[in-house]
Amino acid sequence: MIEVKNLHRHFGGFRAVDGATLEIETGSITGLVGPNGAGKTTLFNVVAGVLAPTSGQVLMAGEDITGLPPHTLFHKGLLRTFQIAHEFSSMSCRENLMMVPGGQTGETLWNTWFGRKRIADEERALRAKADEVLEFLTIEHLADHKAGQVSGGQKKLLELGRTMMVDARIVFLDEVGAGVNRTLLNTIGDAIIRLNKERGYTFCMIEHDMDFIGRLCDPVIVMAEGKVLAKGTIDEIKADERVIEAYLGTGLKNKDAVG
Ligand SMILES: Nc1ncnc2c1ncn2[C@@H]1O[C@H](COP(=O)(O)OP(=O)(O)OP(=O)(O)O)[C@@H](O)[C@H]1O
Ligand SMILES: [Mg+2]
Image (tube, rainbow, N blue to C red; front, side, top):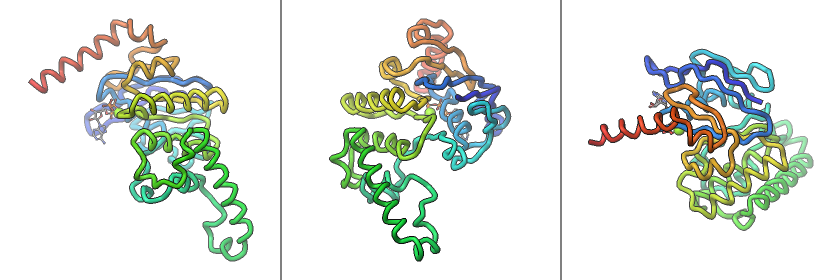
């Protein structure tokens, strides 16, 4: 589905992504792990069109998508979840979902005057779709709650729900489980597995929780210092000397920084 070839993203003289090459197979839930500062989020941002690469290439199903803006990638079915923006926090969970699909008929003045019926039909369809998504995520009881007032984990589910309002093909999740309690983490995990199995979504997810990664992801890719260090099953990764060293290395560095 996705091929990243010799990707670089530098910030001044600093090489946050330093020649990363990797593949995300269609139909997989691929994990992306690595010590803090390994360049995982930067890589995501480049692939999702949020940051321009310094050099290198990104292909989606064989097509060169390097440097395309997020909205173009969105229409190709490549999505990256974002935190619910501050200005949407006073809207209900349902309304947050209904906001997602672009190019709605109601947006132009012409259509406001001449397409009232069509707008009403579309809004009804959108609302039904949003309710279906809330039910899939087992948060239908939050439909009318303000998005800013639900728990952190429920917000993460809502962010995942936003990818279900369009026909996503690949979804990038950056630490979707961070700071989420066990019960909700399981709900998020179940939703990801069902979206993968039942709707054919491919996922690439950054996560620090190895149990969560182990439950969901195969394969797992390890990044360190801007490069791909290893790829394999969770057990292969955990037993890999280079991976252990990379984690220990930053552990020691952190200790030095603190001490
Ligand atoms: N906009 C920026 N300007 C300068 N340096 C940056 C910028 N964004 C990231 N970096 C640096 O690039 C490196 C990689 O950061 P990145 O956020 O990609 O790491 P990460 O693997 O996602 O880490 P974490 O696990 O802590 O989220 C870090 O050293 C970071 O400080
Ligand atoms: Mg990160």
